Length: 69
Image (cartoon, rainbow, N blue to C red):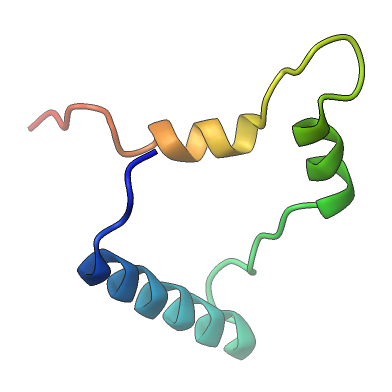
């Protein structure tokens, strides 16, 4: 995965802080967190094969589609 540029890291940090402040006020959606126990099991490859982290894949592909005008 490519490294995020410093400009985008700052932008993402500002966006996250803004969303957290809105959640604290009770506006917008709450802060979504991952279940670290389940995430550890996924990444460790428990069970019959490693099926990956679906939430991470969905987030990666979310902004990669062509926008139709």
